[in-house]
Image (cartoon, rainbow, N blue to C red; front, side):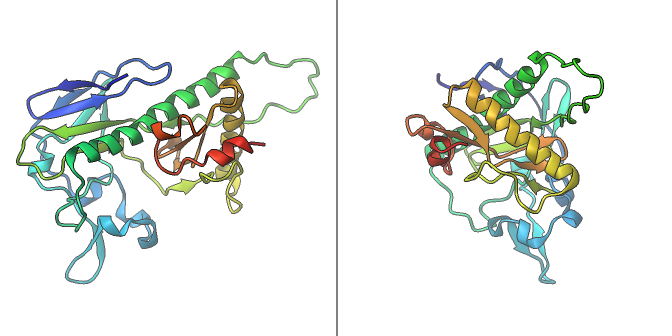
Length: 265
């Protein structure tokens, strides 16, 4: 199904229909002042330099790397609301000053819609995991049995695609995400169905639960799809990969390792 666009005076928000999801009703608020660098979705003091994309970095006069904040013109519409919850910017950069080579508008929008499609499917596939858990009867056969394992309450980060309508704007498409605080953790790589080896404590618990989630998604979809490349901070996940068959791989982001699906344990 084609995307449905909701427009206001300055921006166009595009929403994609997803598996078992309703249309998202977005409201855009205008006239928000330009945020400081620390408000662009990451906390500088918690990020190591090797965690940042070189395309999103610049050097000040002292040689220290820093995030680039967007131009004021690009931030004229800066706050996104969904169900009365504020969504903040996440790693938006000034593409012209950071030296990026911009794609043609139609190509950039197409790639962004593919990435957003992964996020929507990620939201739905994580939802059916919790629906499956809720449908399982509680076993009370033996009071001496160990209690059930702790179940992390996880969800995909809220996000939206925003397209400036004003022709003077250089950067055509933005993918906005709710600000994720804390240090990012990679739980499962996109070419694997096992947790990263060096995780421990709570992070390992989350990774093991996500492995369980993969099994649920694989079985409930009759072997057609499951999520991988799990990463995030706290209870929020972002930038997942939908691992599916070659027939449907083109619907999702690059990095879809179809061989993992065929050899899924």
